[in-house]
Amino acid sequence: MAVKELKNKKLIPENSVFVPGHSGDMLGGSQGPKKINIKKIYILDNATKYLLKFNCILHKHKNKKVFISKIKNSLYQIYTKKILNPEEYVNLIESYILSNKVAKFVINSVRVYEFFDYKWRIPLWDIELVSFWLKIPLKYRLKNELYNEYLMKLFGEYNIDFKKNKKYGFISKIKKIIKKTIPKELADIYYEKLDYQGGYRRAIKLYCKKNKIKLKNRIKKTENSYMPCLQIKNIKDKNFKKLTLKI
Image (cartoon, rainbow, N blue to C red; front, top):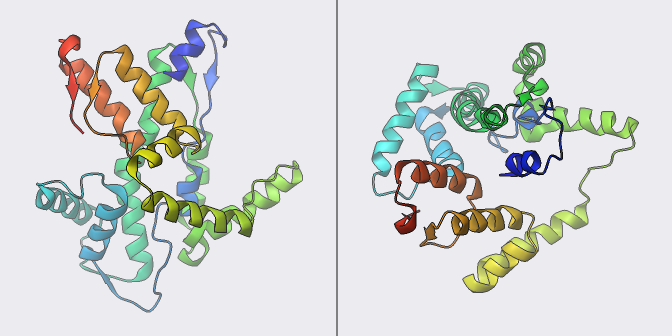
C-alpha cells in the first residue's frame, strides 16, 4: 500500500532502488530464545513448543496437532539428533525461523517492489556478513549482546542514539499490564491512537473499506498476518461486494 501511494503520487523516481533493513536483528540472535540454561540438555519437543508459542499464530487452532507434526518434521530435516545441547537447540530454532518466517515471509516481501517495477537490495543478508554471524558463539548472540554492542558503537560515531533507557522499559511494562486489564473497546482505542502499531491497524481498516471486505473479528496484535490473508482472500473471491473475511 505504501509503495503504491509513493508511485501514484510520484514521490519517488521510476528508477528507485529500495534498501529495507531485513533482517539484521535476526543475525544477532533476536529470533531465538532470550534465556537459556547452559547446563540443560534439550530435546526436539522443546524447540517445537518454543516455535509454536512465539512464531505461530495458529497455536490455538482446532487442528493444532497437525501444525505440531509439521513443525517436528521440518525440524527433523534440519537436525536428526533428538538430544541437543544449548547451542544446538538455539541453532535449530534459528534455522527453522530463517528457512520459514524470514525467507518465505519477511524477505519475500521485497516482491512488492518488483510488482511496481522497482529494484531492491538487502545488504544485511550479504553472504560474507551472514557467514560471520553463523560462527559467533551462543553466549554473544543471546539477547543480541554482540550485535547491539557493535551498533551502539557504530551509531555513536554518527551521533545516532537509539538506546532505550531503564525508565522507558519500566513504562513499557506498565503499559502492557494496563492493556491486559482494561475493556477491549478501550484497548482498541489505545492501539489505534497511541500505540506505534496503530498505523498498521488503520491501514488494514482502510484497505477493507476500500475493497468492501468485512472484518468480523477485531484486529489483535498479529497485524502482519492480516494483510497477506486479506490479499489471498481478495484474489480467491471475485465477488468483492459480498466478501467476508474470517480470522
